[in-house]
Length: 254
Length: 355
Image (cartoon, rainbow over all chains, first blue to last red; front, side, top):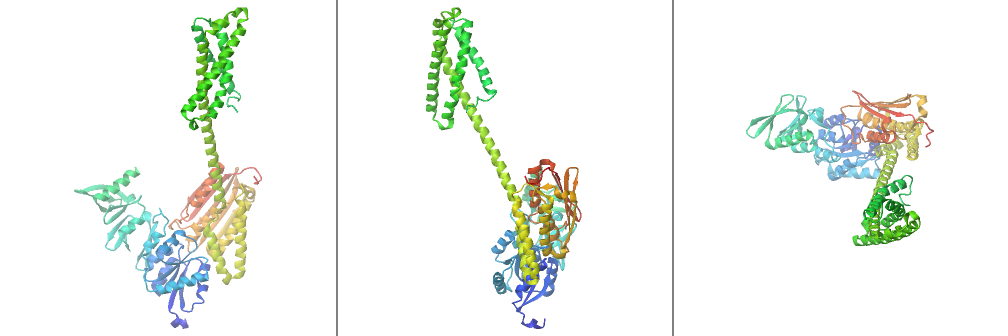
């Protein structure tokens, strides 16, 4: 660390496989300007290390246990330069191409590595595309979100989609209601709606998406409007268009 | 070959002529000039002869297929043939009546019969057209049966090809990850890198030959799995723990090739790879009451998202088992709190595995 002053770029290596991290470390040996701050074996460590060290560049593996590379990106924000690494994932690759994000295919070749590094260097300080947009572009067609990742301060919560009761729009955020708790996440309700399985989730109102499984009954409220009463007695407004969507879906299920 | 020239069918064909002969008898007798006995004696033999003549209808129907012949031509062909053959028949009838009339009992029959020529000609004409239309019915039945057989054959071939492809399938993830491990080892541990290359080569070589085979002894699948696991062990290190409980007796049982490999691969990809701290894969096999029972069990994280390929491997295994054993093989998937278990039971088939 004595030469830390010469090191202009501070990097993090994130991969659940020891050998894969080793490859990146070896490739970085010829780059004295890059300082390896830490190596992380999972997404939680990566999120923590990011908060602690504020790196300039992250080598981020896509397939990792619990938190994927995309989840990590959601947690750490978009102010960091990222080079994704992946063994084989055609959808992720296409998402990277579309959003012009750097990525490396394993096994990683020297030439390709240098190229990606040069590009990443030139991007340091610039913002990344919205993580959830990137993540949804990387999902195979006809496949929906299976869980949500939320950060409350330093705590990371995973909400499996089946445990999501309803979603409420709040300005630039969405409040995710799950098991009696609400979690805030910075995303628009429309973009979240697009990631949810339309067979299970319905937009019942401009500001509400509900999990169909949780709807106990629907009652008339005022002229042209109704309210949905959930199994935990939460009451949500239902707009006229929302009621039509809800009814269509319920009829379909019969 | 005429379709009626098979056992049983020709008899039926002749039986079908009995009512026609009866009609002819009736027509001739009701004319008043011939008696009932005479009519019967003339009509029945004549109908037997005409039954043979009418067999030719099938050939003319075949040479003028319905969908490839213009209607005027079709009618012309068959009407001319009917008229001609009917005339021939009338001449034969005349000769027959002449022969009969030489017997004292039927004397004068020849003259009485000559008045019936128009009836005979008309009947012959219609009978032949009837034979032509029946021939078309037979032809179309035959075509549809052929089409059905062809469709069946095609689907069987398609299924075979698909199964071959499924058998030969090696997950590309596995290959890329292995290559990545080798790439890392070349600098970290060259000896190990070389060892890994050999393992990978052995594994690939073994899978290549298997696509051709219908069955292999369990021991062969196990030695393939040994390579597979050794490779994954390099990748996951201490995160992957293995346990094997193989009953000696079960090793000789013949199983479809690469039927366990996808299950073990799933255990690693969906089980171990999703656990930061790693886990355990247990493989057990035993023979019970004419069945081979294999269990692949792994620790897993029930909260983790099902991976993209999740279910594909299992569905493939299930389809292959169904195609081969029908309902005699059972594949049970039991996700417990921390353990994911796949239990496979398949009938032990006699044979040496070389079929």
